[in-house]
Amino acid sequence: LFEQQRIAKNFIITDFGSIEKYLISSLANIDEQVMLKACQVIFSLVSCKDGSGSHEEGAKDIIIKRHGIQSLKPCVQDEMVEIRKIGLEIISHLCYRRSGC
Image 1: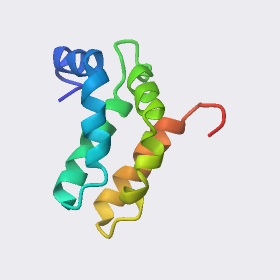
Image 2 (image 1 turned 90 degrees about the vertical axis):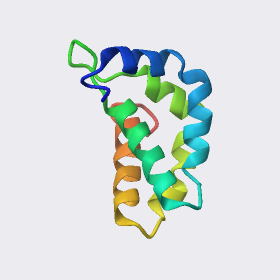
Image 3 (image 1 turned 120 degrees about the horizontal axis):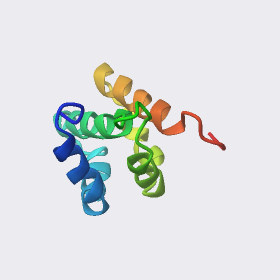
Image 4 (image 1 turned 180 degrees about the horizontal axis):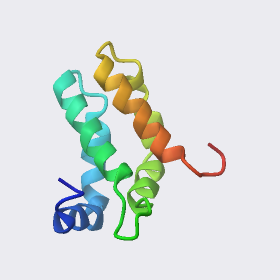
């Protein structure tokens, strides 16, 4: 969706200041489907590339500032392999080319 719909992506990243709280809190939801969808949305945001082919750093910065890496702990410990996989991919994207990671 985000790669095809630049308007939707820009809207979510621009208004991300309120949405990310709900996404990050959903990472610890007892319902695995909610956790999976939250992981998928966050993965889409942190893995998007802008028009020049560079990764979007704004969404990554917001998620890191909101303790998103720590919030991914339930995902990487979940029994559902798909959730663990996406959780680890998110961490990989968040830490890619960052000092201190």
